Length: 380
Length: 81
Image (cartoon, rainbow over all chains, first blue to last red; front, side, top):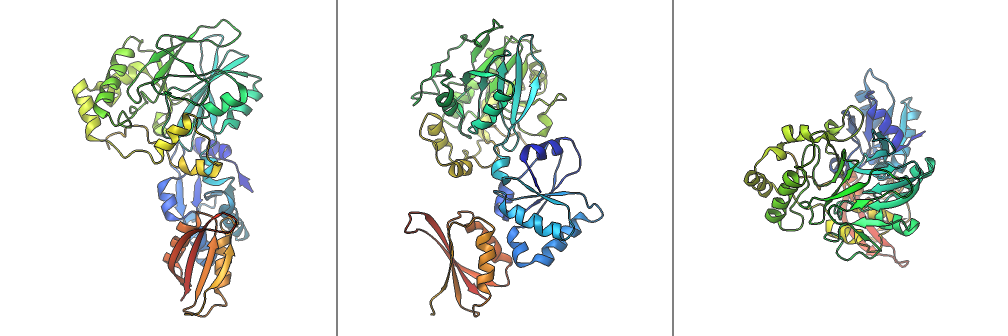
Protein backbone atom coordinates (compact mmCIF):
# COMPACT_ATOMS: atom_id res chain seq x y z
CA UNK A 1 0.00 0.00 0.00
CA UNK A 2 2.88 2.32 -0.84
CA UNK A 3 3.24 4.97 -3.48
CA UNK A 4 6.69 5.66 -4.92
CA UNK A 5 8.01 9.24 -5.28
CA UNK A 6 7.77 9.38 -9.10
CA UNK A 7 4.19 8.15 -9.00
CA UNK A 8 3.28 10.75 -6.36
CA UNK A 9 4.95 13.48 -8.42
CA UNK A 10 2.90 12.41 -11.48
CA UNK A 11 -0.29 12.63 -9.41
CA UNK A 12 0.64 16.09 -8.11
CA UNK A 13 1.57 17.22 -11.63
CA UNK A 14 -1.77 16.08 -13.03
CA UNK A 15 -3.44 18.77 -10.93
CA UNK A 16 -5.77 16.30 -9.23
CA UNK A 17 -6.51 17.33 -5.66
CA UNK A 18 -4.02 15.67 -3.38
CA UNK A 19 -3.89 15.50 0.37
CA UNK A 20 -0.74 14.77 2.29
CA UNK A 21 -0.56 13.83 5.92
CA UNK A 22 2.98 14.50 7.12
CA UNK A 23 3.77 12.57 10.29
CA UNK A 24 7.26 13.95 10.97
CA UNK A 25 7.87 16.28 13.90
CA UNK A 26 6.93 19.90 13.39
CA UNK A 27 10.55 21.14 13.06
CA UNK A 28 11.31 18.81 10.16
CA UNK A 29 7.95 19.51 8.52
CA UNK A 30 8.59 23.25 8.57
CA UNK A 31 12.09 22.85 7.19
CA UNK A 32 11.21 20.89 4.07
CA UNK A 33 8.11 19.21 2.75
CA UNK A 34 6.52 17.66 -0.32
CA UNK A 35 5.62 20.29 -2.87
CA UNK A 36 4.17 19.88 -6.31
CA UNK A 37 3.54 22.04 -9.36
CA UNK A 38 0.08 22.77 -7.90
CA UNK A 39 -0.60 23.66 -4.26
CA UNK A 40 -0.72 20.61 -2.02
CA UNK A 41 -3.03 20.44 0.93
CA UNK A 42 -0.94 19.17 3.82
CA UNK A 43 -1.64 18.39 7.45
CA UNK A 44 1.10 17.80 9.99
CA UNK A 45 0.30 15.41 12.84
CA UNK A 46 3.50 13.74 14.09
CA UNK A 47 3.43 9.94 14.32
CA UNK A 48 4.02 10.07 18.08
CA UNK A 49 0.62 11.73 18.39
CA UNK A 50 -0.88 8.60 16.80
CA UNK A 51 1.09 6.48 19.29
CA UNK A 52 -0.17 8.24 22.42
CA UNK A 53 -3.42 9.87 21.27
CA UNK A 54 -4.64 7.45 18.60
CA UNK A 55 -8.40 8.18 18.68
CA UNK A 56 -7.99 11.92 18.88
CA UNK A 57 -5.42 11.99 16.05
CA UNK A 58 -7.57 9.84 13.77
CA UNK A 59 -10.46 12.17 14.62
CA UNK A 60 -8.38 15.13 13.45
CA UNK A 61 -7.66 13.39 10.15
CA UNK A 62 -11.37 12.61 9.68
CA UNK A 63 -12.25 16.23 10.45
CA UNK A 64 -9.68 17.40 7.91
CA UNK A 65 -11.08 15.09 5.24
CA UNK A 66 -14.66 16.17 5.97
CA UNK A 67 -16.90 15.41 3.03
CA UNK A 68 -13.95 14.70 0.73
CA UNK A 69 -12.91 11.18 1.58
CA UNK A 70 -10.35 10.98 -1.23
CA UNK A 71 -7.15 9.05 -0.86
CA UNK A 72 -4.44 10.56 1.29
CA UNK A 73 -0.70 10.02 1.16
CA UNK A 74 1.14 9.70 4.46
CA UNK A 75 4.72 11.02 4.56
CA UNK A 76 7.58 10.67 7.05
CA UNK A 77 11.38 10.86 6.90
CA UNK A 78 12.16 7.33 5.71
CA UNK A 79 8.84 5.60 5.12
CA UNK A 80 8.44 3.44 8.24
CA UNK A 81 6.43 5.73 10.50
CA UNK A 82 4.22 6.70 7.56
CA UNK A 83 3.52 3.02 6.82
CA UNK A 84 2.66 2.55 10.51
CA UNK A 85 0.20 5.49 10.51
CA UNK A 86 -1.26 4.59 7.08
CA UNK A 87 -2.12 1.14 8.35
CA UNK A 88 -3.76 2.60 11.45
CA UNK A 89 -5.86 4.88 9.19
CA UNK A 90 -6.85 2.08 6.81
CA UNK A 91 -8.17 0.11 9.77
CA UNK A 92 -10.48 3.07 10.33
CA UNK A 93 -11.68 3.01 6.72
CA UNK A 94 -9.53 5.89 5.48
CA UNK A 95 -7.87 5.29 2.10
CA UNK A 96 -4.26 5.99 3.02
CA UNK A 97 -1.03 5.17 1.23
CA UNK A 98 2.49 5.65 2.51
CA UNK A 99 5.20 7.47 0.54
CA UNK A 100 7.80 4.76 -0.12
CA UNK A 101 11.20 5.69 1.30
CA UNK A 102 9.82 8.90 2.79
CA UNK A 103 11.39 12.31 2.28
CA UNK A 104 14.82 10.71 1.77
CA UNK A 105 13.55 8.96 -1.38
CA UNK A 106 11.50 12.01 -2.38
CA UNK A 107 14.72 14.07 -2.32
CA UNK A 108 16.52 11.63 -4.64
CA UNK A 109 14.00 10.82 -7.36
CA UNK A 110 14.25 12.36 -10.83
CA UNK A 111 11.51 12.89 -13.44
CA UNK A 112 12.80 13.13 -17.03
CA UNK A 113 10.96 15.28 -19.60
CA UNK A 114 11.97 15.29 -23.28
CA UNK A 115 13.16 18.55 -24.86
CA UNK A 116 12.43 19.58 -28.43
CA UNK A 117 15.81 19.27 -30.16
CA UNK A 118 17.53 20.04 -33.46
CA UNK A 119 17.55 17.03 -35.80
CA UNK A 120 19.90 14.25 -34.85
CA UNK A 121 19.91 15.09 -31.17
CA UNK A 122 17.74 14.01 -28.28
CA UNK A 123 17.70 15.56 -24.84
CA UNK A 124 15.83 15.31 -21.57
CA UNK A 125 15.61 17.57 -18.59
CA UNK A 126 15.80 15.65 -15.33
CA UNK A 127 13.96 17.37 -12.51
CA UNK A 128 14.91 16.21 -9.07
CA UNK A 129 11.56 17.45 -7.85
CA UNK A 130 12.19 17.17 -4.10
CA UNK A 131 15.19 19.49 -4.31
CA UNK A 132 14.43 21.55 -7.40
CA UNK A 133 17.74 20.54 -9.05
CA UNK A 134 17.87 20.07 -12.80
CA UNK A 135 20.21 17.86 -14.79
CA UNK A 136 20.30 17.06 -18.49
CA UNK A 137 20.88 14.07 -20.72
CA UNK A 138 21.87 14.86 -24.31
CA UNK A 139 22.15 12.02 -26.79
CA UNK A 140 22.70 11.31 -30.47
CA UNK A 141 20.81 8.02 -30.53
CA UNK A 142 23.77 6.01 -29.29
CA UNK A 143 25.95 8.09 -27.00
CA UNK A 144 24.91 10.38 -24.21
CA UNK A 145 26.36 13.18 -22.13
CA UNK A 146 25.01 13.97 -18.67
CA UNK A 147 25.18 17.55 -17.44
CA UNK A 148 25.06 18.33 -13.70
CA UNK A 149 24.17 14.81 -12.49
CA UNK A 150 23.30 14.43 -8.82
CA UNK A 151 24.64 11.78 -6.52
CA UNK A 152 21.97 9.13 -7.03
CA UNK A 153 23.66 7.79 -10.16
CA UNK A 154 21.33 4.77 -10.36
CA UNK A 155 18.63 7.10 -11.70
CA UNK A 156 20.81 7.96 -14.70
CA UNK A 157 22.13 4.44 -15.17
CA UNK A 158 18.55 3.11 -15.40
CA UNK A 159 17.50 5.91 -17.73
CA UNK A 160 20.40 5.33 -20.16
CA UNK A 161 19.95 1.58 -19.98
CA UNK A 162 16.25 1.78 -20.88
CA UNK A 163 17.14 3.76 -23.99
CA UNK A 164 20.24 1.74 -24.91
CA UNK A 165 22.46 4.79 -24.60
CA UNK A 166 26.13 4.68 -23.64
CA UNK A 167 27.60 7.31 -21.38
CA UNK A 168 30.16 9.20 -23.46
CA UNK A 169 30.76 12.20 -21.22
CA UNK A 170 29.90 14.04 -18.03
CA UNK A 171 29.93 17.79 -17.54
CA UNK A 172 29.46 19.83 -14.39
CA UNK A 173 28.65 23.49 -15.11
CA UNK A 174 30.33 24.44 -11.84
CA UNK A 175 31.54 23.08 -8.52
CA UNK A 176 28.21 22.58 -6.73
CA UNK A 177 27.87 23.74 -3.13
CA UNK A 178 24.33 22.73 -2.25
CA UNK A 179 24.19 19.16 -3.45
CA UNK A 180 26.55 16.29 -4.04
CA UNK A 181 27.46 15.77 -7.70
CA UNK A 182 27.15 12.36 -9.32
CA UNK A 183 30.06 13.26 -11.62
CA UNK A 184 32.91 11.66 -9.68
CA UNK A 185 31.00 8.41 -9.20
CA UNK A 186 29.84 8.20 -12.82
CA UNK A 187 33.41 8.83 -13.93
CA UNK A 188 34.66 6.07 -11.63
CA UNK A 189 31.98 3.60 -12.75
CA UNK A 190 32.14 4.21 -16.50
CA UNK A 191 35.49 5.88 -17.18
CA UNK A 192 33.64 8.43 -19.32
CA UNK A 193 35.49 11.75 -19.70
CA UNK A 194 34.42 14.19 -16.99
CA UNK A 195 34.52 17.84 -18.05
CA UNK A 196 34.80 20.80 -15.72
CA UNK A 197 36.30 24.26 -15.53
CA UNK A 198 39.67 24.28 -13.69
CA UNK A 199 38.82 27.68 -12.15
CA UNK A 200 36.27 25.77 -10.06
CA UNK A 201 37.82 22.30 -10.03
CA UNK A 202 41.17 23.53 -8.77
CA UNK A 203 42.39 20.21 -7.36
CA UNK A 204 40.06 17.37 -8.38
CA UNK A 205 40.92 13.99 -6.92
CA UNK A 206 39.69 12.35 -10.15
CA UNK A 207 40.75 12.62 -13.80
CA UNK A 208 39.06 15.67 -15.32
CA UNK A 209 39.05 17.13 -18.82
CA UNK A 210 39.49 20.89 -18.46
CA UNK A 211 36.98 23.00 -20.39
CA UNK A 212 37.84 26.38 -21.83
CA UNK A 213 35.66 29.12 -23.26
CA UNK A 214 34.78 28.40 -26.88
CA UNK A 215 35.93 24.77 -26.86
CA UNK A 216 33.46 22.12 -27.98
CA UNK A 217 32.06 18.97 -26.45
CA UNK A 218 31.55 16.24 -29.04
CA UNK A 219 29.26 13.29 -28.69
CA UNK A 220 31.12 10.15 -29.72
CA UNK A 221 30.04 8.55 -33.00
CA UNK A 222 27.69 10.65 -35.09
CA UNK A 223 28.64 13.94 -36.62
CA UNK A 224 26.22 16.28 -34.91
CA UNK A 225 26.40 19.97 -34.43
CA UNK A 226 28.95 20.47 -31.70
CA UNK A 227 28.11 21.71 -28.27
CA UNK A 228 30.10 24.73 -27.21
CA UNK A 229 31.29 25.83 -23.78
CA UNK A 230 30.65 29.46 -22.84
CA UNK A 231 32.49 30.71 -19.76
CA UNK A 232 29.94 32.59 -17.62
CA UNK A 233 31.64 33.36 -14.27
CA UNK A 234 29.84 34.97 -11.36
CA UNK A 235 28.09 32.35 -9.25
CA UNK A 236 31.53 30.72 -9.19
CA UNK A 237 34.72 31.75 -11.05
CA UNK A 238 34.56 28.66 -13.27
CA UNK A 239 30.83 28.61 -14.02
CA UNK A 240 30.46 27.50 -17.63
CA UNK A 241 27.32 27.29 -19.74
CA UNK A 242 26.81 24.85 -22.60
CA UNK A 243 25.36 26.05 -25.90
CA UNK A 244 23.74 23.22 -27.85
CA UNK A 245 23.11 23.53 -31.58
CA UNK A 246 23.18 27.30 -31.20
CA UNK A 247 19.67 27.14 -29.72
CA UNK A 248 19.70 25.81 -26.20
CA UNK A 249 21.85 27.19 -23.39
CA UNK A 250 22.37 25.17 -20.24
CA UNK A 251 23.19 27.96 -17.81
CA UNK A 252 23.99 26.00 -14.66
CA UNK A 253 23.59 28.35 -11.70
CA UNK A 254 24.33 31.50 -13.72
CA UNK A 255 20.82 32.38 -14.84
CA UNK A 256 17.56 30.88 -13.56
CA UNK A 257 14.08 31.53 -14.87
CA UNK A 258 13.23 33.92 -12.06
CA UNK A 259 16.52 34.69 -10.34
CA UNK A 260 20.29 34.43 -10.71
CA UNK A 261 22.96 32.31 -9.00
CA UNK A 262 24.31 33.72 -5.74
CA UNK A 263 27.72 35.34 -6.30
CA UNK A 264 28.42 35.67 -2.56
CA UNK A 265 29.36 32.12 -1.56
CA UNK A 266 33.08 32.67 -2.13
CA UNK A 267 33.16 35.74 0.13
CA UNK A 268 33.72 38.15 -2.79
CA UNK A 269 30.15 39.24 -3.44
CA UNK A 270 30.96 42.58 -5.13
CA UNK A 271 33.69 41.20 -7.39
CA UNK A 272 31.86 38.02 -8.38
CA UNK A 273 28.62 40.01 -8.70
CA UNK A 274 30.32 42.23 -11.26
CA UNK A 275 31.52 39.14 -13.14
CA UNK A 276 27.99 37.78 -13.07
CA UNK A 277 26.61 41.02 -14.49
CA UNK A 278 29.06 40.84 -17.39
CA UNK A 279 28.29 37.18 -17.99
CA UNK A 280 24.57 37.95 -18.23
CA UNK A 281 24.96 40.98 -20.45
CA UNK A 282 28.20 40.51 -22.42
CA UNK A 283 28.72 36.74 -22.63
CA UNK A 284 25.03 36.05 -23.19
CA UNK A 285 24.60 39.35 -25.02
CA UNK A 286 25.52 37.90 -28.41
CA UNK A 287 22.92 35.14 -28.27
CA UNK A 288 19.62 35.57 -30.12
CA UNK A 289 16.38 36.21 -28.24
CA UNK A 290 15.12 32.79 -29.31
CA UNK A 291 17.77 30.95 -27.32
CA UNK A 292 16.18 28.67 -24.76
CA UNK A 293 17.61 29.12 -21.27
CA UNK A 294 17.77 25.88 -19.30
CA UNK A 295 19.04 26.29 -15.75
CA UNK A 296 20.37 23.85 -13.13
CA UNK A 297 17.75 24.77 -10.54
CA UNK A 298 14.02 25.28 -10.55
CA UNK A 299 12.71 28.04 -8.33
CA UNK A 300 9.04 27.25 -8.17
CA UNK A 301 6.10 25.73 -10.02
CA UNK A 302 5.61 28.96 -11.98
CA UNK A 303 8.87 28.30 -13.82
CA UNK A 304 7.54 25.24 -15.61
CA UNK A 305 6.64 26.04 -19.23
CA UNK A 306 3.66 24.52 -21.03
CA UNK A 307 5.77 21.68 -22.42
CA UNK A 308 6.68 20.64 -18.87
CA UNK A 309 10.21 22.02 -19.07
CA UNK A 310 11.73 24.42 -16.55
CA UNK A 311 13.14 27.04 -18.90
CA UNK A 312 12.51 30.30 -20.68
CA UNK A 313 13.21 32.20 -23.91
CA UNK A 314 16.21 34.49 -23.50
CA UNK A 315 14.30 37.37 -25.10
CA UNK A 316 11.54 37.02 -22.50
CA UNK A 317 14.07 37.06 -19.70
CA UNK A 318 15.73 40.17 -21.15
CA UNK A 319 12.33 41.83 -21.02
CA UNK A 320 10.86 40.49 -17.77
CA UNK A 321 13.58 39.08 -15.51
CA UNK A 322 14.14 41.40 -12.58
CA UNK A 323 17.92 40.93 -12.40
CA UNK A 324 18.39 41.17 -16.18
CA UNK A 325 16.74 44.60 -16.27
CA UNK A 326 18.95 46.26 -13.66
CA UNK A 327 22.03 48.30 -14.63
CA UNK A 328 25.39 47.23 -13.25
CA UNK A 329 25.38 49.40 -10.12
CA UNK A 330 21.81 48.56 -9.19
CA UNK A 331 22.50 44.87 -9.82
CA UNK A 332 25.49 44.83 -7.47
CA UNK A 333 23.72 46.96 -4.86
CA UNK A 334 20.84 44.52 -4.90
CA UNK A 335 23.20 41.57 -4.36
CA UNK A 336 25.00 43.26 -1.47
CA UNK A 337 21.74 44.23 0.22
CA UNK A 338 20.24 40.78 0.30
CA UNK A 339 22.87 38.15 1.05
CA UNK A 340 21.15 35.11 2.55
CA UNK A 341 22.87 32.65 4.89
CA UNK A 342 25.15 30.06 3.28
CA UNK A 343 23.59 26.66 2.56
CA UNK A 344 24.33 24.30 5.46
CA UNK A 345 27.33 21.99 4.86
CA UNK A 346 28.21 23.82 1.68
CA UNK A 347 31.94 23.74 2.34
CA UNK A 348 31.89 19.99 2.99
CA UNK A 349 29.76 19.43 -0.10
CA UNK A 350 32.21 21.40 -2.23
CA UNK A 351 35.09 19.28 -0.95
CA UNK A 352 33.15 16.08 -1.66
CA UNK A 353 32.49 17.35 -5.19
CA UNK A 354 36.23 17.86 -5.60
CA UNK A 355 36.74 14.17 -4.83
CA UNK A 356 36.78 13.62 -1.07
CA UNK A 357 35.33 10.17 -0.27
CA UNK A 358 31.53 10.11 -0.13
CA UNK A 359 29.97 9.97 3.33
CA UNK A 360 27.56 7.10 4.15
CA UNK A 361 24.23 7.52 2.26
CA UNK A 362 22.33 8.54 5.39
CA UNK A 363 24.80 11.32 6.18
CA UNK A 364 24.84 12.45 2.55
CA UNK A 365 21.05 12.68 2.55
CA UNK A 366 21.10 14.70 5.78
CA UNK A 367 23.67 17.08 4.26
CA UNK A 368 21.51 17.72 1.25
CA UNK A 369 18.20 18.14 3.08
CA UNK A 370 15.92 20.87 1.89
CA UNK A 371 15.54 22.76 -1.33
CA UNK A 372 18.34 24.46 -3.21
CA UNK A 373 19.82 27.53 -1.63
CA UNK A 374 22.07 28.61 -4.48
CA UNK A 375 19.56 31.01 -5.99
CA UNK A 376 19.44 34.60 -4.94
CA UNK A 377 15.93 34.78 -3.60
CA UNK A 378 13.42 36.98 -5.33
CA UNK A 379 12.30 40.08 -3.59
CA UNK A 380 9.15 39.14 -1.74
CA UNK B 1 16.75 8.63 43.66
CA UNK B 2 15.86 5.16 42.42
CA UNK B 3 17.79 3.86 39.44
CA UNK B 4 16.10 4.54 36.11
CA UNK B 5 14.41 1.75 34.19
CA UNK B 6 16.32 1.22 30.95
CA UNK B 7 14.88 0.66 27.48
CA UNK B 8 17.33 -0.50 24.85
CA UNK B 9 16.06 0.95 21.55
CA UNK B 10 19.40 0.68 19.76
CA UNK B 11 19.15 -0.37 16.12
CA UNK B 12 15.42 0.40 16.01
CA UNK B 13 14.07 2.72 13.34
CA UNK B 14 11.21 5.11 13.94
CA UNK B 15 8.43 4.70 15.00
CA UNK B 16 9.65 1.83 17.21
CA UNK B 17 11.68 3.72 19.87
CA UNK B 18 8.57 5.75 20.68
CA UNK B 19 6.12 2.83 20.41
CA UNK B 20 8.29 0.84 22.84
CA UNK B 21 8.88 3.81 25.15
CA UNK B 22 5.12 4.28 25.51
CA UNK B 23 4.70 0.60 26.50
CA UNK B 24 7.67 0.77 28.88
CA UNK B 25 6.18 3.77 30.69
CA UNK B 26 3.10 1.70 31.65
CA UNK B 27 4.41 -0.23 34.67
CA UNK B 28 6.51 2.66 35.99
CA UNK B 29 5.36 4.62 39.05
CA UNK B 30 4.80 8.37 38.68
CA UNK B 31 7.99 10.34 39.39
CA UNK B 32 10.25 7.50 38.27
CA UNK B 33 12.48 7.75 35.23
CA UNK B 34 12.66 5.73 32.02
CA UNK B 35 15.99 5.88 30.21
CA UNK B 36 15.67 5.21 26.46
CA UNK B 37 18.89 4.48 24.57
CA UNK B 38 18.45 4.88 20.80
CA UNK B 39 20.75 5.01 17.77
CA UNK B 40 18.33 6.83 15.47
CA UNK B 41 19.43 10.50 15.31
CA UNK B 42 15.84 11.42 14.39
CA UNK B 43 14.79 10.34 17.90
CA UNK B 44 16.18 13.57 19.41
CA UNK B 45 13.61 15.88 17.80
CA UNK B 46 10.90 13.23 18.00
CA UNK B 47 11.16 12.81 21.80
CA UNK B 48 11.20 16.61 22.17
CA UNK B 49 8.09 16.90 20.01
CA UNK B 50 6.30 14.07 21.77
CA UNK B 51 7.10 15.56 25.21
CA UNK B 52 5.28 18.77 24.23
CA UNK B 53 1.86 17.10 24.07
CA UNK B 54 2.36 13.99 26.17
CA UNK B 55 0.36 13.50 29.32
CA UNK B 56 2.53 10.51 30.21
CA UNK B 57 5.95 11.97 30.89
CA UNK B 58 8.23 14.96 31.09
CA UNK B 59 11.52 14.96 29.14
CA UNK B 60 14.21 15.54 31.75
CA UNK B 61 17.30 15.47 29.56
CA UNK B 62 18.90 14.09 26.38
CA UNK B 63 22.49 12.90 25.98
CA UNK B 64 24.70 11.85 23.08
CA UNK B 65 27.25 9.09 23.52
CA UNK B 66 28.87 6.04 21.97
CA UNK B 67 28.04 2.43 22.81
CA UNK B 68 30.42 -0.52 23.19
CA UNK B 69 30.04 -1.30 19.47
CA UNK B 70 31.12 2.20 18.52
CA UNK B 71 27.60 3.29 17.52
CA UNK B 72 26.50 6.84 18.22
CA UNK B 73 23.72 6.80 20.80
CA UNK B 74 21.00 9.25 21.81
CA UNK B 75 19.72 8.75 25.34
CA UNK B 76 16.42 10.24 26.47
CA UNK B 77 15.36 10.50 30.12
CA UNK B 78 11.58 10.42 30.60
CA UNK B 79 10.08 11.14 34.02
CA UNK B 80 6.63 9.62 34.35
CA UNK B 81 3.87 12.03 35.27
